Length: 237
Image (cartoon, rainbow, N blue to C red; front, side, top):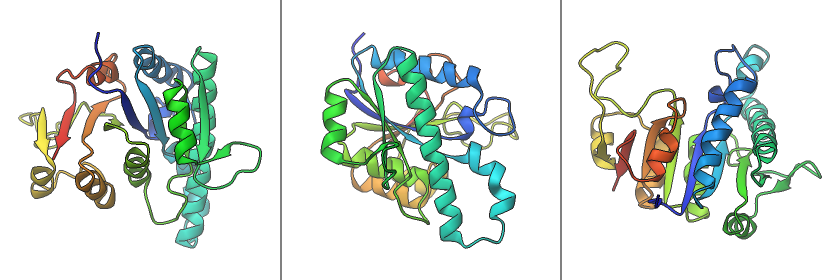
């Protein structure tokens, strides 16, 4: 099997780690996601991951209510580092080599983001898990994924979601909704499909960095995307 991409950036939401739980990390779900990532890494594909933090920060939302936005965002960024450590450790236990890089200094806990070092890790077959978002408040982890994807020269950003692509309408509400196999950035903007937040989407478009939206819960979907098969929705220039 010949992969269509040599280096990918996988955006993994914190919510994806919850499984059926209300918050936190479901061990069974984490093991399933790790198996999907390992299958792709075993093909020789260089894998970088940007972690979200919704599974942890959701549980703190009450405490953050009324808080200064910058401080609340900092809490969210810390949650992404916690998730990054959990995912990297699970990957290591599964037989992969993985490390964590944080967008802001974390002392001896994990190393700070370093573009050239991250690329060296990837070339050596190490999966790099990015935590801490962009390191700045007011930016989402979607934007972090677009930014890191561009910085490490990834060939595509893979956005793992709960649905198997982008649809003409909400498939849960409209039985006639159909999945886009491919769609251009301009078409997605014109139809207000909200693939990613505006800043992330614009960055990918300007850098001619394609996006594929797919379901991380569909077994083998990640590998099929990497092999260039019709899986999810491919968003292109």
